[in-house]
Image (cartoon, rainbow, N blue to C red; front, side, top):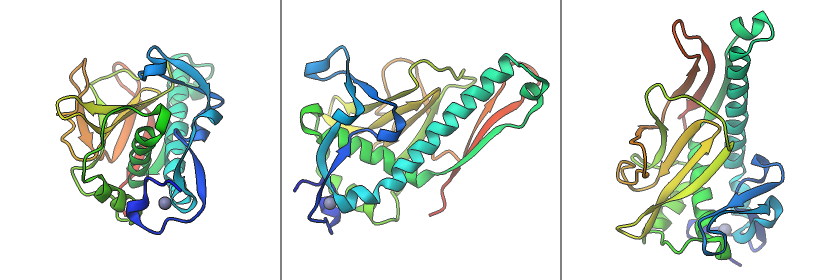
Length: 244
Ligand SMILES: [Zn+2]
């Protein structure tokens, strides 16, 4: 029996097939790229992206994390549609109607980012050759003790000032890799135009990605999407609840 959460103790004897990426985020397929067999991207069915890397009880524990990711998906889609309706209104309500609102537990979203990072690292033929640090078991224990991570481990919102929220590929996630130390240092993910970074032991400035300079906001309490231009209107608002 294989379980990447074994360090947390109390594994059940039953193996479970874990989807590398939360199944309910996708309709039928995902595109993987960057590995030896799929350097330029290869499409596979979501039901093929399953690996025996967690026991049943630890897999079940993580369902709240999956729910948080699905809530973020629903928010990002709702916010994007609200913005589209505002830009091309079909009725007065599209211009004057209320903002699209949602609330998510921030710790659950961190849990999802951590488990996705672990899944992508531990999944055998899909995995990268990078290593996790030696003290990763401490983070695994914190994941399953219900207390959450201690700062500065956690979730960062990545955004440029006045950044436009656009669509394109709706969901994207990738491992952060620190070349100098040859370790996997976190996870970056994007739902529609909302970009996040999860970093478990590094100042994300160190793990910053190539390309544009980005500023990370640690454990944001809310995310607001406003209309562009003068007299901007609140179109969508996500509350991230950090109570334990
Ligand atoms: Zn287990």
